[in-house]
Structures are given as C-alpha cells and as structure tokens.
Image (cartoon, rainbow, N blue to C red; front, side):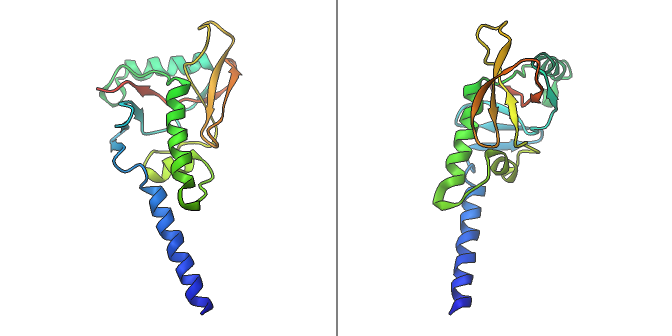
Length: 163
C-alpha cells in the first residue's frame, strides 16, 4: 500500500511539472533567437544572458544589437518595468498552479525554452525623469521590482514591439 501511495504521489508530481512546463504553450512562440509573446505582441530575445551592464552599458548593448541586426531586427530596446512584470507575473501564476512551487520565474522560462534566464535583476527602461540617477529593475527570481543606481550592473534582456 505504501508503494502505491508513493507511485500515485510521483505521478501527480509529474503531471504538475508538465502543467507548469507547458503553461505558456500557445502564448509563446519560440523561433531561433527570439520568442514572441502572443498575449502582449512583444518579441523577446530567447537568450536572457546577454550580459550584465550598468544602465548606460545596457543602452550601448542595445545599440550594438540593432547595428548588428540581431535576429534580423534593428529595433531592440530595453523593456519597460511593466513589460518585464508581464513575464514575471505569468511565471509566478503558472508556477504556483496546483500547489507546484517553482523557485522563480527564471526557472519556468528556462524550462519553457528561453535560454539562460538568470535568477537576478534585469534592467528596465523605466527611469523618471530620463536623466535620473536610477532606473527600475525587475527580479527574475521572485518578480519584485525596485529602483537601482544606474551605475550598478544588472542583466539585459532586450525586447522589441513586434511585427
């Protein structure tokens, strides 16, 4: 009887893992170096590890991607904090469904097919006023958001507005 209970529990865990893994099925379209979010219309780089930079370095990286026409596009930019949070809120909701606890959005995104999403903070373009000494960052570990000095180094995850 004890083995049967363990077997049933293991099967339930497998089902929950697949539910979390494919929670984004239909919402995200993976293609080469990019991922299209059909819900928001945004296109993200598939790689979430393009480097850590200070805020100005992040802007320079975006300029380089555009000059190199990364993934055939030249309109990459830093996402707003709200755009980053659409991802983290999706992951948190999908990861907590059915009692399954995914440690953080980064893990769900990596399991779904994004590449190397880090459990750290990511720069957003949200800075008011634009020349302010700080900008918003969003955590791919737990979805939290905070303001950080632009001289600090954080991850860069470019986005474009889509087609």
